[in-house]
Length: 341
Image (tube, rainbow, N blue to C red; front, top):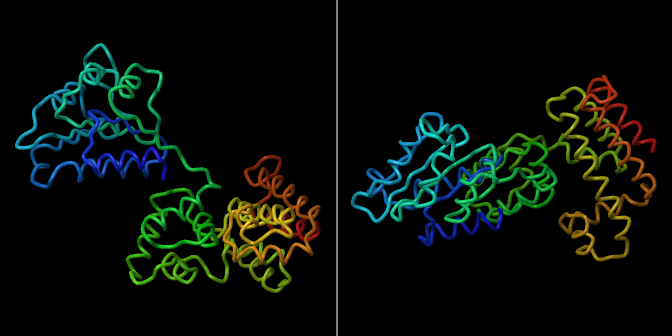
């Protein structure tokens, strides 16, 4: 959750409203959350019947929006007007097109209207006069896609927000298994929380039961099996992933291996430090540090570096660069070369 998003939510709940809001960006999760608050929090249920207007960009004309924003609220202090799917808004029959057709209103907005423009899946052009005026008169919030390496952090924070602890290992498993769709991740975590209201922590057992990630065969434990001494478990997992490619697409496996070897790489420079210091450097919970440190004697730094270089090579091959090998062939070759590194 970004500081800017928190600021908007806090202001709305304190009944501190700007006359116009423009929310845009490629990550719809936060945009949907803000829009939901505009629909449910600003007006009372009784006031919404007459004072909540929702228009859609593909259908609305510029005069529809202006008329809605300029009318007076009925039996309420204010009204709310929402223009959804604003990226598809064309404006209509006036000299200015798209959101620029609403420039005259933004320059002189009605004090009794709270106007939200939801511009999902795409950023509005910040160079236009319209966006510049919104920033002067109201609030402009952009929701950017979260980078894959930041997903576990987001999952842990979401858990804290709903009072459901998610440790690093479980966060990384969810990130690898569910991908970068924040709404999907939040829905799955919330689903578990609803089913086990008495639990305060998300465990691997709950993930297995309610989301379906295999406890025995999950991509997070596969790198650990390779670098540990349990060859029987490693080959059992390898055979499973070769036979069930949908359970672990090779890009996700490569990402899991990279995360594991990166922790090992950092761990070599944290020998002799406290578990807390090492955990902070490696980005993991302190009680997992001992597991990483225990395997380092069999994986000296030069060996770890070779594996990281191999992963970079196979990452390009997995997307078809200089290779037409199947995912199964790449996986067998990649883990074989890592074992020999």
